[in-house]
Image (tube, rainbow, N blue to C red; front, side):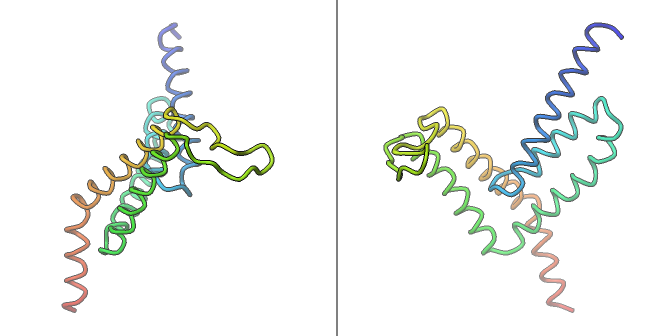
Length: 153
């Protein structure tokens, strides 16, 4: 193997695994965990056949979840409120003026407070809003058609 191809494989492997782990950790949290996981698999699929075989099922699951998330207006509203709450949390975290109760090593200030952390949280909320708008544009017409078809039968 040539030196540059070894470096490429190392880069692809490290990047893919970091994205995969972050995606798995983010699955239960608000945000695009499934999409980050999918991105990690896509990166790893450049070098590994096992990852390539898993891209399509994870992609389909991500799209199914996105479509389900915009199937009704209450879900859309709840997603928008959640994304806005994440942004507000990031702003509060960034200002670092909040005092919290001292519990063990935590307190009286937020851990890792300041704009370095707050801006990352705000960015997550903006990504969530972007994904919500994308999902509405891409999947909402299909959901509405299915609802009308099921009512007609």
